[in-house]
Image (cartoon, rainbow, N blue to C red; front, side, top):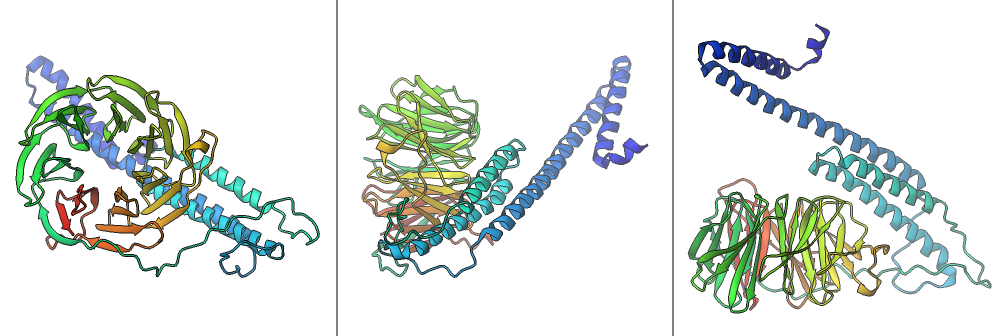
Length: 496
């Protein structure tokens, strides 16, 4: 009786249904009546699914409570270390020896604030990831933060006498650009909405020669549109499950469309000038859903939930190499053609670099604890931007000569970009502007010298009380069309 009291009602019902199934099976063997066994078996399966969902909800609540406890402990320790003084005004010039104490104190305060902000993102990370094995990695991150706090606490903040030579270097203080800096941003005018997809639009590509827009969707289709009129030209069912990734490239005189989906396959399609698709090959080496496709030289690069980065020969579809990322599932990819590098990011917030052709791990970027949903590389190859699940965009300045597996390259800027996931990032061809799309339904335009968006384009839909999240972006080669795909299956087009 004590055991029955500890069981939930759904669990008791599942056990009863299981016993009834076994009894009805025995009866069915002698009577050859199989209706009741099938009925009880169906009830048992439904109860089992309900119990699994209930258990997942319990696990989520436990993990969230554990994360809050960790945050409270670290927050109280950080507060106890905060210096009791008024921070000096921002320093915009090189510090003199008389100002060394203010410089170092300001640097320590900034470091403490950065650590506290990083700890807050742990809770947001927990809300997005419910797998219990992630807790061990979060605890390791918390231990690293505690070690940094201890290191900061042990720093000697005394100022060296003026007639002596300090045994440390003066910290480099970055100068923040004024938020009210006037920047001439492109003027976009909303022109149309395309509504033929029934589910989220995961990818957008523009044909370099034909006036076509190509879109992929979770509704298992690829659609081809006339970009100037918005007319639907062709629609093709390309996967057995939703399409998550899209790439377009030219192979000799032919154009090839590559698609990747939930069904763990990559398909290469021959795209005709009239918009017809003919299946060329199917690539099946992944064991997880395909979340990103990119082009690097004569190779097609794919990233997957199975934690691998794979490189394929575009012409034959042959697998060249596969790289495993132990930090977790991979959701985003970008490539640096000049340096022959692949950049990937995923569930644990790590930005990793891999060598083209060999798949060798080259290094990673530090300073991010939030899951990465989008990556963009500036045209000059010097700036990496990552869109995160906490709504931020982090930017790193890359010195490829110093990029090693031991190097710790920290962000040069963090933009508070969106409310919710940042799932789409794209640099303008001149590298001056960064476009971002978020779950809040806003498309924002950022200038390289500002920390605030210079323009916000909002997708409004009167048929629903909430805004449609943006999942994909595209910019036409002539810079005349800006296009966004949403989680509700709509495609929105702006024109200069």
